[in-house]
Image: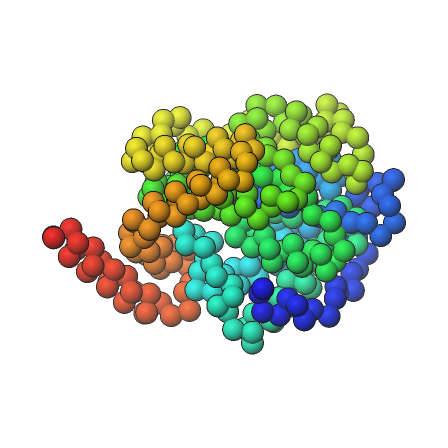
Length: 341
């Protein structure tokens, strides 16, 4: 249990919000639906969120501004995203950490104000919309927390998992963030396995990035069925496309960006999620990833610390940069000794 969650005073007062979702008919009184888009960064979560909004789910009122790598927009609430970053930082982590954050290590006097910010942020972003879509790739590591917060608002939660080939994701992260391919692959796997594990008992579907790009109308019909009766019947043929052909970026199809063992594991994880493999299969894959990650934990830790100290990640700086540099130097020394031996 995350400190502070069990002591909630209840949902905040919610302002009125005009949206297409409010005009949806046939929703039982008092019911609300929160659609969580869960997926790794650079996996098409933005275009998927836009597609869901075109079906009738309300977008946040405080949208993040577009950026060089998302000129059409991120379609996520800037307030919640910033608080999520601070929450991860309080746990000694960040969105680019391959190690999962442990929010239970954050002391109550630190986490409780952040939880209050999240509650208020949900109210500001979505008002009283009966159906809304919430996207931030950081949520993959925070599903239990957000399920609790949304439950306080009386919202039923359903999930759309955004799935993209790990090679393509790693290539995109390498271009945008200069991560090594191996680091990007590990980051993808950690996010996807956490999202899969924590949403198994919820109504959900998996949407493959390639399917969304090839013809968004077929995934849209599947999404509309998931959202019923909170959105009208889907007529995507008459809706504007959320996909712009000139913004499609394709990474090499080859998996040789990774070493053979890691590449095979990532491919198996991808296929298992795509096929909605049973929990025991997914748990076995998660155990395999944990074993693989442990073998290269020192390398990943050094790359994480290095990334925190250079752009573009200076917007999520560590609380003590000098200590991070010291830890990084110590990590390099251990790696030098290991390689020399």
